[in-house]
Length: 355
Picture (tube, one colour):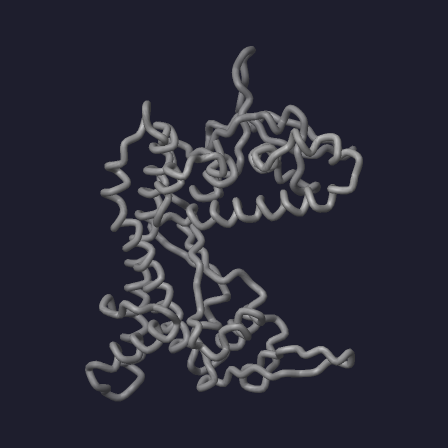
């Protein structure tokens, strides 16, 4: 069952996970879509006939049917294919079949190489072995019991209201306001996200925003970094920073902010774990056993990935600092604390004790 159908008590189990804000945003979005549908169709004969028989819960069902059964079909994109969209998921070697498009554009289902199937045996496909735990729960409503890693998770980043460039940075970013942690395998952690670079620079570094007037009389905000207009948003800023002599400094700032953001998430998750585990569930409660088990599994997987990411960021920070110490003359021993504390607190990270 998708989390959009969970009870309020069940959704409370997600506090501290990356699924909690995703589900909250999805429910708000579904309400807006339903209201827009009703408003747009209000004057139609169809709506006048059925308005007493449809409700928001019906729109939830429509969303769930599509979201949990749509396939990312090769050469076609997201769609629902009769019969194939009813196949259940199995990951890794347990996957029996794969779906493809033939030369005539028809959807076909093929046995994987080396696989055999007997009469009465279930035909399974994969919903995406690369999908993270949060995405699996969000889109399909379940986690594989053998899943050993959260695989990937998205953490939001915010800019302080006190930053005079806050609204301009958000407008110029052209990307999601956050970053993605990825389990790269073999104990390695990777991260992706260009938004972080807007948190690493301000006017002292050469970032400024100019107001321009179009020929129609409208006003536009243009971002500029060292006289180079940022028409490509945060991604272009990243490319320019990578060519700078201060690249190691910018990377240190970014990693310090990311590590603090991971630390904050771990604190919420860890700080609520005992209370979550003690919540009554099962018969006579508002929390179903299956939902409780899935929520606890998600919490464990995300905590483990966050913990590994924090340790990896710590190694990166130490490495950057060691490199800087080798290149520069001796500095006051509190220089590291002041430098990182400034950049974490300036971007909304209040706890600098970890540094």
